[in-house]
Length: 168
Image 1 (cartoon, rainbow, N blue to C red):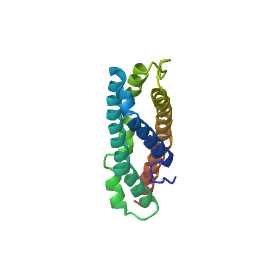
Image 2: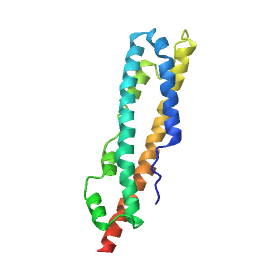
Image 3: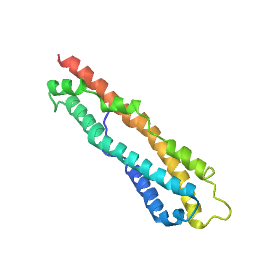
Image 4: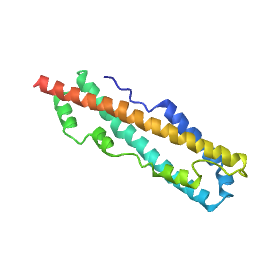
């Protein structure tokens, strides 16, 4: 299997869109009840976690997959591949580490399941709509990441182990 070592362009665009929307609405949210201030703080912490997750993928998972692919293609020595395969796998680590999606529990609680009050202004309504969409998009992204991305890396690991055995 081939694996393109680039984060999902669509996912990156969607995350950027939600972040811009949150920033634009920071003042409007700040004028509402304290719960929404807490929601904003929780989102900022969640955003930092997502950024760390993306950097971890870019810094370890993608280079790891590229090296596995290089070995299978004959561009990496068996010794280098053996060292790589015997080191802790960033893929297997990622499979054990679920995303902390507790932010969405808080968001649904603070926003009455993303349902604005009848007296809410357009900014708050728009924010709730964006938060609901962000949750759907992130859950879809997580499912694809686990089923496709990490699945392909596990396949690459299996193929690399098989190739390593065949070369010895």
